[in-house]
Amino acid sequence: MGVPMGQALLRAGHELRVYNRTRERAKPLLDAGARWCDSPAQVLEDSGVVILMLSDRAAIDAILLSDETRAQIAGRTIIQMGTIAPNESRAVRDAVLCAGGAYLEAPVLGSIPEAKCSKLLVMVGADTDGQFDQWHELFTAFGPNPVRVGEVGQAAALKLAFNQLIASLTTAFSLSLALVRREGVSVDLFMEMLRESALYAPTFDKKLERMLEADFSNPNFPVRHMLKDVNLVAMAVREAGLDAALLEPVRANLERVMAEGHGDDDYSALCLGLEQAKPAPA
Image (cartoon, rainbow, N blue to C red; front, side):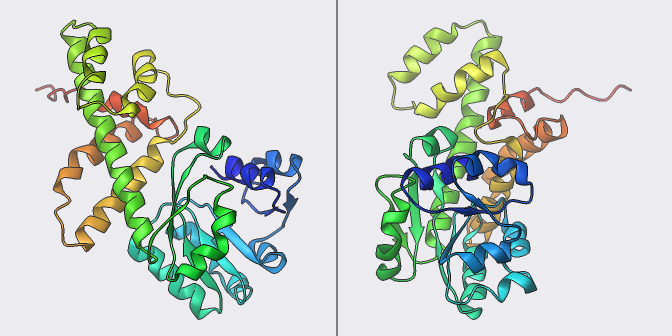
């Protein structure tokens, strides 16, 4: 996601400095006019606002909150756009404020195709309206209608709520699809009737061909990231005093697919984990 989002910033006319642990992955941005920085500290030194698009809280701590980079945070605004738990986002905010910086969270709904055409849904957690207003134009590089959800942590919660639906809906759809196929029911008929019902969600059609063709290459969002997010949802749900048991079958299925070597495949590969476990031979 970092590359198409960086390209969106360049299309909108922003100057861009980039750092990634693997420089080669930043090549499309450098070719498009971004400037390479040799370290996260250099990014902070050369920038007034820093956008983080990292996989998890551990990566954020390693990149942003090391002894070297923490000293460069003062006077900068940090915008965290990855998917992390609400309490994790609040903890990062506290560390940034302690170091003299400002902090917003701005996770997005959508994937690489939406990022490429600047149609992401941007959810902003900002502790004041002024912060959101200050960076509103920047957010429009990613999507036309950024929304301030509320304070820091609330946008993170909303993002996890959406990702829970993605994981659960896709799992439920793949099981229904597998059942009708096993029973010889026409998939076309199944989909035709589903589309006319209140049960339909567009994500079903987005993943249908991949499941039918068993082609999970060129992922928009890989299995390993979906599993990470489901685990984050479970943690956030428990911290909110809710029961996370409904997530367990979804999580267990993703773990089976991961164990079979599909961690880097598109998350529609979760349909591969539906086979009933065979009893061990006597």
